[in-house]
Image (cartoon, helix red, strand yellow):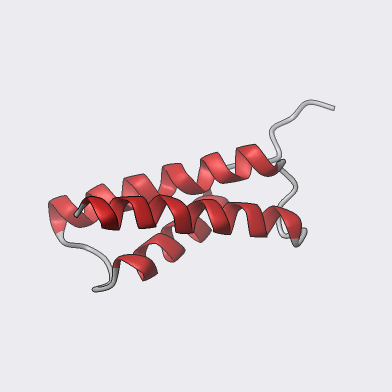
Length: 79
């Protein structure tokens, strides 16, 4: 169980970093990683409590990290 949690955090961090380096987002590296890890934590605990999600923890981490980057408003900076 804890190995799945650590793997979820690592996969979410990689997705956050990769999304920033490829130009898909423009939040900054650290905010993108924080957004992805937060979404992955949330989805991980929803999976434990309610059993909602894919059967493999890796797919849950990928889906939740990408979903968090899409859902969280990221262009909030004042100009």
